[in-house]
Length: 372
Image 1 (cartoon, rainbow, N blue to C red):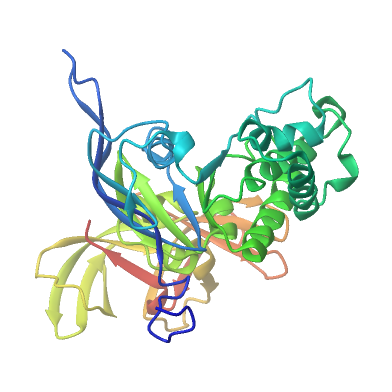
Image 2 (image 1 turned 30 degrees about the horizontal axis):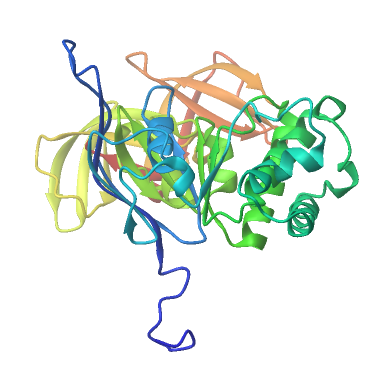
């Protein structure tokens, strides 16, 4: 079929990586079996920046290692560009990996570090030099071609590690917490640089991190993982504003979570009881009377109001300590029963003093009802 045919799949439609019912089990010989990855089904589109996000031990790095070919699935299938690669050695997959420790050869200069893989493959010297220089230019490091790794900063070494991976022209680039050794300022600079590079090159990037802000900053889509299971796959806005369950709500950013119970459900309107008050929401979830649920509220959605101001969702209590965090302060409100709410308030706005009675309120649309 000609490439300009309107029925030909675009890059956004093409699937770069597919995992079909993939499991990775450790401790199967005389020990209790542990699922590092538990029946994962996932499709990653060509050209997207996809991130596995979760706490340590959730299975994200094990998943990355299976995609790279460093680990074999216990069961299931792994497809690369619609071809099964389960059992195919790492060096026979058109995939490269950038590690946290960079793994640069200290005795080789930048040019030979970046070109090492090409020399192993027997690429001609003239072609090798041209590809190395192109890769270094793509990461803005062509000026350092004759330096040794010890003569480079952490951020520069990270760029060289990226160039060494990119010079092999992989269809998929894997990044395993590559910014973990960098200081905060440089880490944020590298996040933006790598994201801009990925957009420019159009290569599929698969990223692993436990840093929520990093994932939200860089990703087209994010898979939030816990105990070997994907909890939610969505874009950054969906993950942050529409968490699918309590785990995602609690793991991504700061979240107030209040226990509640369904009083009535009629059509798209649900009435719930929480903290001794009743609130009604628009909700399409299949809730039933008496069912327990959770009200999830971001701190930045809450604001102090005067007692006589009418708000559909408001909470009254005693003002606790305020923590200064630059442009904002995180203020706490202690509700009857000891429940603590946190609100993120701009420091340009007035707020009640510690120990005073006060009311926090928010728009009902800012509250997410969770049932699992």
